[in-house]
Image 1 (tube, rainbow, N blue to C red):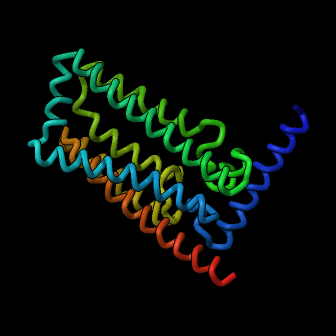
Image 2: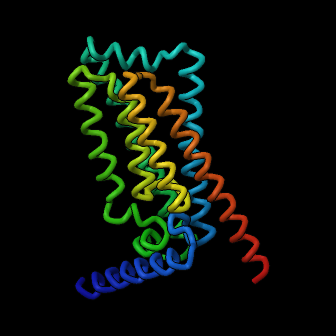
Length: 231
């Protein structure tokens, strides 16, 4: 058992060194290092974008019905519980999908799961992504249960800014990611100051950032395919 732990620690240390070298050399550390991992990122982020666009379309076509239901929860706690339950189930399903796709990618790359994660999806290591989502879900739940749903939309925009700063989920070059994070903070502050309760804005915000992330992932996959053909 000790030797296995030592091997895993060594793999983790090598992955950290590798990411530092890539960052120093100008390579985007947020983008996975091989074609299989790139495809995993494309599938999962594409799925998330599809869901976000679907919710965005529904919000527009239904006359902001999701926002109206969210605000009704301030007077109906059961409605708030129901909404939180749906969000929790969706989040669990997406996290399970992400880990399954990552495990499948590790299998096809003929790598150990821990090694594959350390090399390409470091934010998934030691279930840190799950922990981070849980930490974010708790204050969101408290706002809804306390009848303060009007602050949900600004908080969601703030979460997007946090993920951009941390380099989680989105595959965007570091400098551009930080610029988008500042813009996201401005958007969140604007929503707060304007008392905007509309879920339309964080949905549009998330969709735009995810689309940009998919652009960089697609470009990286093309480059990886071209390099493989020339090899």
